[in-house]
Image (cartoon, rainbow, N blue to C red; front, side, top):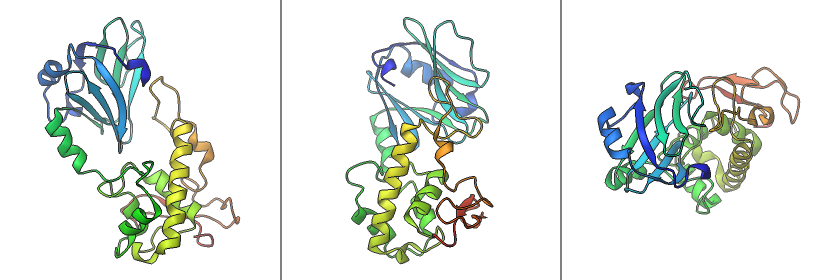
Length: 258
């Protein structure tokens, strides 16, 4: 969000304290008010806001959370949980319909501990076919479960794991050790492609998700399998199967193509 760079936080209003983690409303205000925003970036499924006082706001939106940037005169969002009022007008709001996400403020040591628990970013140059093959090799876990393990690979959610596995032609329930070098290379390329296209489309909206300007994500129209259980496979027209056998999450696949 380059529109936020250089903006100072003049006030913080905590409307739903249950979204805070590791901080009280008073502590959040004390550490954030008066600081300016240096950079907004992503780590795994978290949005990180670097402040010029060396603190970091870390927002983990989970299923229904998101950040919304509004003009100074805009009405507050009905699902607003934490409001950061910006100098010169405007509000950065953390909104969360079901309040499953979290808002934290971390110093350098706290953020280092947070970051250490997260795996490699799939869009980084270091995420090579060999790196993915190393994660899969020797594992008896389902390959889909490995993809969604944030301690190994950062930021891959259920939707994009489904899509990448279909594109790579790999059964989601196959053990990681059975994927092989060629399969790992296909899966790596498919995952990078799916995530890149999803980012370009500003995410996937089925119901609650909105981007920072309140717009719906546009990737749902590009989904090949997720949410399409019982419909035809885009590749072979076989009826897509759906199961919840892997960690209780919806897994949609084509038994012919995968």
